[in-house]
Image 1 (spheres, rainbow, N blue to C red):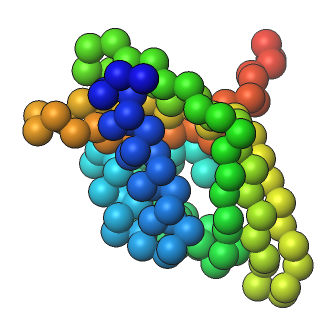
Image 2: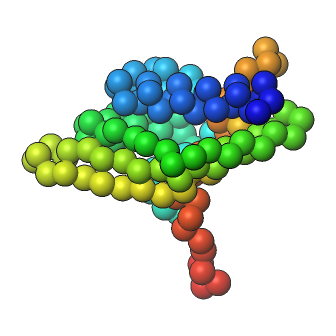
Length: 132
């Protein structure tokens, strides 16, 4: 694994662990200001304030994430992270909540050499039909 691949994976792990801890400021710091996040399949959010609010609402489930593997492809200042994920949590009524999918994230190298996410689609396994 190259240093760039390690750095991209470290950012993904930082985002995930920060979210599990409820540190939404740290979560938002892993994204560029102009980002697109699919909190629901087919409905990306590009407004940072709305993204923060969605993370805060989703955090109420007290989610725990796991990945079954990671692939990181880097070309110049652009990277793609792909990973199958699973999530378990508890809704406000105490019911068990489970989810999963294929995370596909596009990252860009920043001027200081760090990486930030530009596009985050945790539902990358959902494909559009020809009618959409």
